[in-house]
Length: 95
Length: 196
Image (cartoon, rainbow over all chains, first blue to last red; front, side, top):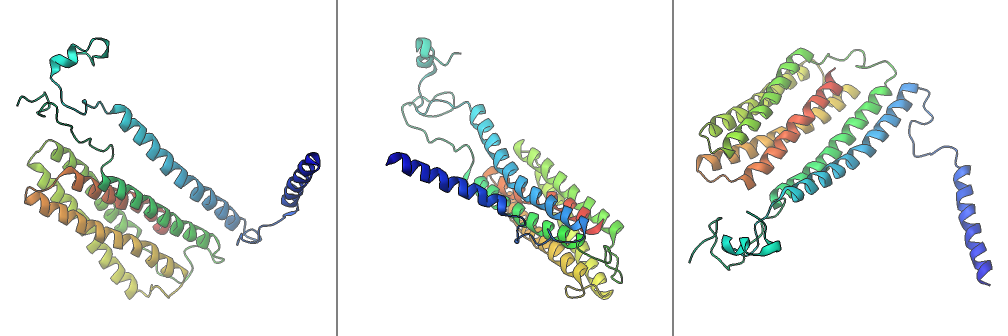
């Protein structure tokens, strides 16, 4: 019984993939059927631009944040005398 | 009670300073939405321009003042540079901060006034928001940017006032700078797309 259920799921997945092949032209695309080559190219260019810009912004922000966190050399949260820090053996933060 | 090297009393928990101050994070998120907003407008303009059958700019429409606006562009870029140096002076606690911030504000004001004069001349030549595609796109894109310049100008005036009262801290100055750099940075792209 389980085998049949699995096969049915695979069949549904394959049918869904097959449907994507059937799609010829996206009707949401206002310039795909345009006779002007320049217009079609502008649509492709702006699509790439609008896809890349947010990814670059998010990537840039994460990179900047990671750099800031890495560069932050924080003192201990509770102030302790320097000699105690020095005497902390291998736990010492060093001179 | 003795203090540690940072002047803090021993044994008292200290408050961690955030990696990114709230004001800066808020402004960065706001500017990110603004970048997408302007990207959408520019994309619409690029597609509209490529769709024009009679070529671009459309025939029979007034020409945009390319050379005069180049001068205005230089003024806005110089304003950004002045603000950068004002921030450097602010970090050093130098008295030149006020002068440099004043220069940045002055150049921003010059940009707004110059653009206002340019609009008056263009309207006089018949280029209005309803006169055609060029007018519609021009006033939408350049007008939206002008609104941002005015907002940035007011923010910089506010920081200048705080600086004059010795009340300006980096948590106020930094977000104001981010907004102004955005306004300055987006303008050359608009100039290149709309005027050239």
